[in-house]
Amino acid sequence: MEVKSRNENGIDILSPEGRIDTSTAKDFEDAVMGTLEHSSKIIVQFNKLDYISSAGLRVMLMAQKRMGAKQGLLVLAELPTNINEVFKMSGFSKILKICNTLEESKQLFN
Image 1 (tube, rainbow, N blue to C red):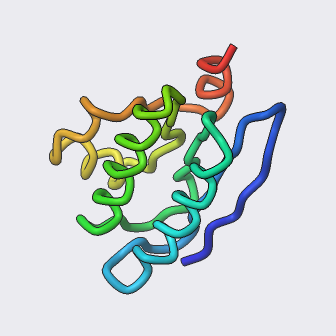
Image 2 (image 1 turned 30 degrees about the horizontal axis):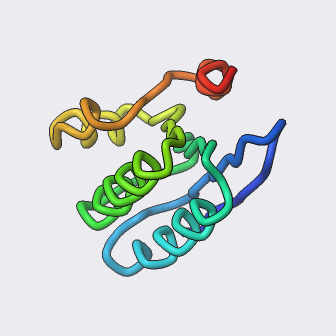
């Protein structure tokens, strides 16, 4: 698992690739929480993610709570069908803002 990071017009975009499971969740957490330290506008683009475990879901829940505390916005974008199903079945799709496209996500920050 690798997390690529970029900034577009003041929005930090994180793009995890591969699998987020028990062995890689800590690296994903470090990337997300490190970005949260300096940003209140984050998009996590999941289009290159193959799998997410409950450990990865926990990271997203922690990030949402911290982002809410600082009154920022965390948006998930471009979830593959299997990843989207995990978020729906876990109920996280009701807690987290999810958009179909990266462009749709960016518009939420305007």
